[in-house]
Image (cartoon, rainbow, N blue to C red; front, side, top):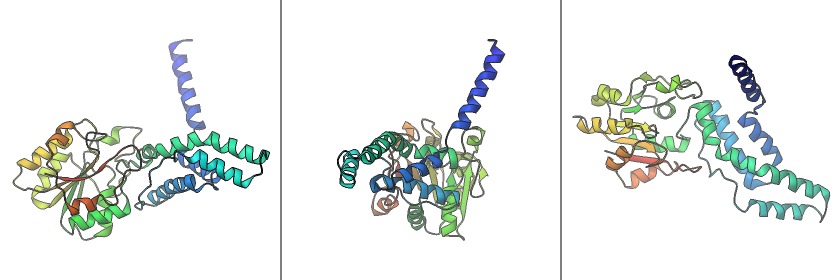
Length: 286
């Protein structure tokens, strides 16, 4: 087969695979019906579907439980089936086989919810409604600059709560060049095309807080911003959402940040809780 023919074949195979792929939410809807009698799994699936429904409607979702099938679920499933069906009833055996076979896929889909949010909505930090209220109380009615805002979920949430508050939303929009990523492609508010340092230098005299959520992993943008803020005549706190020494930000930033603690910071994390293996949280640093 000639190289050109091989390339065309690969394209056809890729298109065929894409067409056969079942959308994430359609799969979760199917499994909700399958596990309708098992609340331990059903509640997790319902949380995912409700979060998607709210986001699709342009609303902030609710906090999520840990999206992971309980370790003892198979034991609970066996107990339920034994209590429902007579011993050796083929109907019970069939239900056990059907649900046991589906369980690994459901567990994987639950763990993949963050990937779905990134792909579908360009949402990296999971910004839920109660957290937005906590954040709004923390900053009050004072002017705020959000950098690296992505699609602007945090700024939009604050604007909804305090319509008269000045919220300056910025992002370099570099993410929009990535074909498979929705970050920056479907903004929910007006976003000015500025990188983090440029945005701070432009608006430093006009703001009381900077918000930075999920700075890209391994890049030093966060450290560059923190240095610029420290060098400025206008000293303001940086509210940072990320996973320390994990999936977000640079080692330099996490090493050099001076962390604020106390009841106010604790309250910022009251509703910002991990739902998967990434343990991001809210920090206030200088």
